Length: 443
Image 1 (cartoon, rainbow, N blue to C red):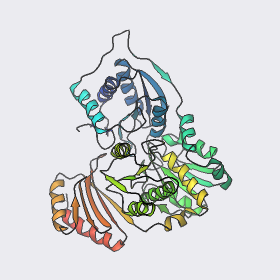
Image 2 (image 1 turned 120 degrees about the horizontal axis):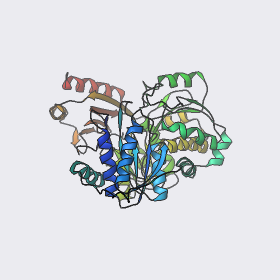
Image 3 (image 1 turned 135 degrees about the vertical axis):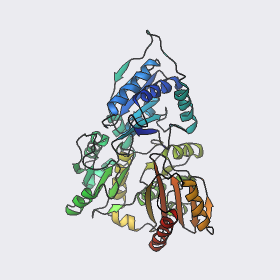
Image 4 (image 1 turned 180 degrees about the horizontal axis):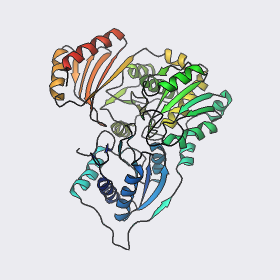
């Protein structure tokens, strides 16, 4: 679709998105949903207040009342929408750099809406087909709290008493963004002693980039290595996922973290798993251990959420560390991930590094390149070069050789090409990377 990507609409103000688009987006969402109330929240990017006001004006002009939840993580408004059974709008660009912003639609069950819903909202925007209220029927706006109900719902998924007995010490990086309002109080409720960094609100994200990569959180890693913590956590910009460091300050790959969570969940309840083609075969080994299956999807939390609903899967996840438990919320939540990590360690009585070592050692390398106009030509070259590998085009090009794979796809959230290489053999990954970079050549 021209506007909606992998997860909402994203762009740079007055380049690829405009205040006018925010107004039309609000009008379209208000027109699409029959509900009288629509929740609205935002992150703390420099353009969020502007875009929030424009979207709010559109919602009000469509005749809908707005419940203003203020600055909260995306999962907090999603939980609010689920509890109240109303749709919502989130102003955020998630993990994108601070010059980006965007709009997410939230369905009445708190999930990311499916592509059919998004396409109808997009058609309304592009065709400017809106319900326009008369002067005496415009909507009203009121404030409400989404933080306390959000924290209550998270804690229902873990053994709070057992976690409190452990007296954990945690280092948390809130990315100068939304989770500064939720993760510190969550840790307090769980009896955790914590040190927080980047816990002041600043839409320029001065502490680090809003995506928690090994490079962006290198200062956190250094801190964690110098002071003993049981666990360290770094959130992304809108709080729908988290990455973790173990007790030695070593980064835990998101692919392994979600596999650890899946193993923990499946020990208590059986059900199928839903994971995208970018996740390694580690999740297949976890599924085999518990006698369940893995259903593969294209990349993107909304797609995973949709398939979880259709298949009644017990859990979904992404290789970036995003965990989706549909009984709680059919979308990712970094706050829930923090609570689950503490629950897993407290239940097994081992340091998290030991638990990660017990997993089959699948490795996953991610490479991001600038967008390429010759993407289709590149894809054809790579497929031809690796003609003996089995191929599918569910999302870009995925080539499989036993339990190793190459995935080449266009990013749905930014102008970039992403390459994933996964295997239990590091040499296999290194060799494929050199071959592929040579095949791609300069832009």
